[in-house]
Amino acid sequence: MTFRKKTPPALPAVQTAGARCVQDFSASFCTYEMFDEVRRTVPIIDAAISKIIRLIGSFQIQCADSKQQTALDDFLRNVPVGLTGQSIYSFLDSYLDSLLVYGNAVGEIVLDQKNSRVAGLWNGNIQDISVTPGASPMERRYYLHTRDGDRLLPYPDRILFSALKPPSGGIYGISLLQGLPAFQKILMQIYHCIENNFDRAGNIRYAVTYKPSGDAADMAYAQERAQLIAKEWTAGMQAAKCGEIRDFVSVGDIDIKVIGAEGEMPATEIPVRQLLEQILSKLSVPPFLLGLSWSSTERMSAQQADILTSELEYYRRLLEPVICKIAKTFLQFNGSFSEISILWDHINLQDETELAQAALYRAQAQEIEQNLD
Image (cartoon, rainbow, N blue to C red):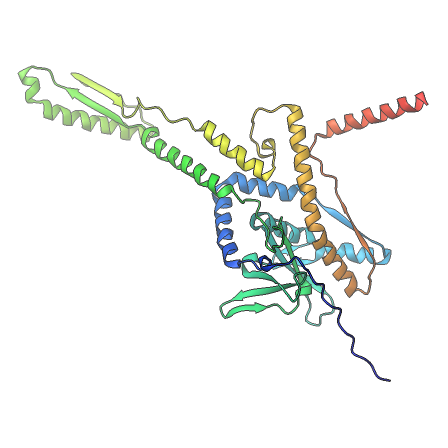
């Protein structure tokens, strides 16, 4: 009996794919460092990203094969992630963090040395990876940047890659922080000016002026009296640092003024708030979730929560292919090819009392409708 070599399926031909499919990775690398700087210097941006990641919530995976459900649940809870993490939630937190900040995220399903089971998950650094189309624009090739040049990764089926809102025909996604470096620069300039103004005017300095009278004796000892006044004033200021209250007593016409007291500090509340409004509108995070007590009505807060809920559902849709690939790979190594479904927890941004009251109103309305029938 002779066996014929199986012909691999033909790759799909994409007629509308052009040269734009290949993007310059070096340009993306420069923006990665810029986004790191934005997140590091503006704490509210870091807080908003962390808030989004936590609000994504948890999920459960239901396997059509009930015999594999227990093994799958144990794998999701205890799978090693890198050197310090554990569980698929730890992997997805870092994965989504990279996706939001850089617009791209990369991970890997790690197998054991015998390639017989899934040994763990690994969060890759997107700055070390570049992606290009293969023989077809529908095929991806991954390259690792090394000192000796780019090295093609031999097992692309183990790589997990996601892009956030990539342009049409593109591979790399767009960071959630795109457009914010300009606002970050202005905001940091304002805070730097506040620092300088408080250093100059906030740290109070005194001008002590001694005006001798026209008397000949007073004029003759003017220099000695000025030196004595300066000495006593300095001693009083030094004693105040130690908590000692010392009075300053002098004879003659002495004028004491605060240097720069006439100049007012420039108001920064309005420009800072305008910048923060632009930043939060880009991140789609309501101000009240970040502790900002801006005036807003109850209806406005509810609408902002609904907008954030839709954003979180969009991020969940981006993560679902990654979750399915991890779960199906584990099941396949366990000899199962059953279907799976992801059940996300309910996104709850409202007060529990309001939810309970709304449920009561719905029950009362159903009761009234049944009585009318």
